[in-house]
Length: 169
Image 1 (cartoon, rainbow, N blue to C red):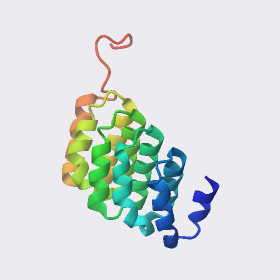
Image 2: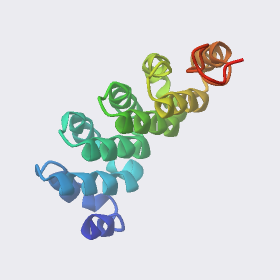
Image 3: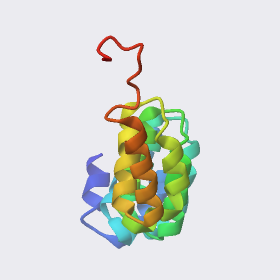
Image 4: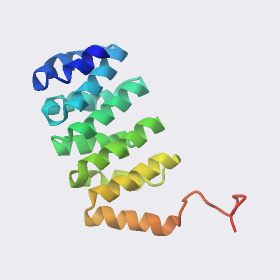
């Protein structure tokens, strides 16, 4: 952990070593390397394909760190948006809500993920729904805003409030 964090001070020259750690097959090494790559932001753009491949990793922790790194790196935007949109379908709510949060960081570059974000507005987890709504706000395109407004109008203040709830008037 300390080594990965220290490598963030090195900058772009650290990327090849971090990529090796990312693909080492060791859970801790992959998680810490993904974190460090995310801290390097655009300087780690070469790592985006490897981070996207981590969506298939068995460990939730590694998938979540990879998703966070993709949002921080953000370039190339198309590849990051596609990988993050796919992560909105992850079996882990932690990974799904991190994907929404990371898409928020992309701003308008996250536009290709709008259909996946609209789908995430129906997620069973309220945090996933909230981050999907937040991402639509920060993407800010007409399509994203229309989807967000439609969601907000249909849901009142809480999309899970139903007549079966105890406090429903």
